[in-house]
View (tube, rainbow, N blue to C red):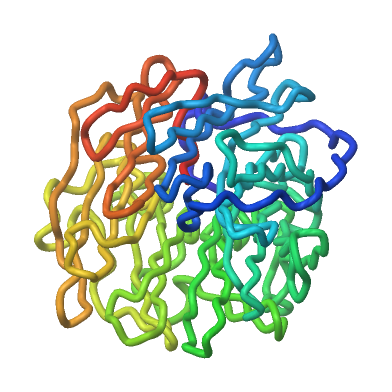
Length: 430
């Protein structure tokens, strides 16, 4: 299970699904569509921000999503059928899901066990199909071309599904997102002890870890093990093959109670060898009081295809990392990879929400990572700056969903952006 973050940041999710909406016809592509995050077809990337605890139309924690468009507009939206505790906007992912050449937006609604697609390419998003697939569906989302057909698939985690969670891939070996293939928690773990609280699908990352030209799916299982030590499954969805990573395997450290290994994930080719590498957050990792919930936190960086750990197990006690080990820092609660320096090499941002900070690791020519700046805007303890991260076009966006009495706030690095706090605003970013 996930390390014990403050209760006010946890969304109660327990409602049945509404009937699915009919899938609309594919719209005409806007002439200027420009990439996976251009939602309005003007050729520039836009930013989607989730506020899953927002009250909408009197419905408590129904949730809302804002799109901050590149032209300066901000548009908030929510489904007309939203219900209390739906958690609309708990996860977000963007990409061309209907094949019209323009980016669309997938919105997780885990309280309704659903994912809603919004179609892009026009000045305003249009409501698309509603996807279903198991309890907690939409807790985590990712988009990638997993089968090499030049058509994107949508990956959705359902960590509350019976049997310890599941992952559903929509559109595998098919056009659009109509077809669904389900991967259960037992995949690759037939001989391991499993429990309903494993929470497989709580985090997702996609990358070509073995260099075969097709991305695989890294799936977080932060509750795996009888004491919540955690694990990660790396899945080839076409072949149905899976490999399990954990601190009981070729990774530094050892599995301990409530480590939450796999709570966060990020994939990037840090060493520029043509194969993706995987960063894994372990925010419950304890150094000073093992098995007693110290939760200073740590991050592993494993290099594909072997998933060997070349550098240290990163934490606030690592040489060169600013600060010191601190209880309940939750170092590694969020991760994001991308080029922040303009040198063409991906860097790694690590959220430390217990200290309202973000630690940057910068890439070197050798492919190793080294400590960079510590970002710390000086916020009240409850803000939880660093609980969510996103790197887009060389810019780091940081969520502080606990800010302002848990209405939430969004930052560009350490600069607060003028976006309303409506209820855990910036709990998710895309």
